[in-house]
Length: 103
Image (cartoon, rainbow, N blue to C red):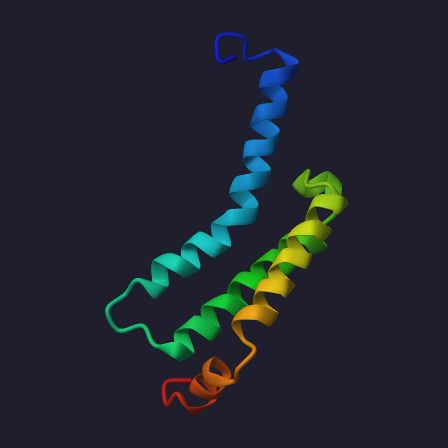
């Protein structure tokens, strides 16, 4: 596959890999930040919202700019929202955010 960079399969692979990196990057950055020794429940909420804002910004751009199909953006948004509802069903993280003296 890598021997012929001009092939259609290589182009598809490269395009899908770029989509994957652009979509997963904000989530990975959030996870790295949460691995810090001083991370707390407030940080979990802040970084989750920041990742969502980054994805929202990415998906609000024109498809011609990002190359990410609208159907894929909608699927990612649905998964993000479902995980938000599962993870933040209790108010612990939001309350920790509100009561955090650093914010």
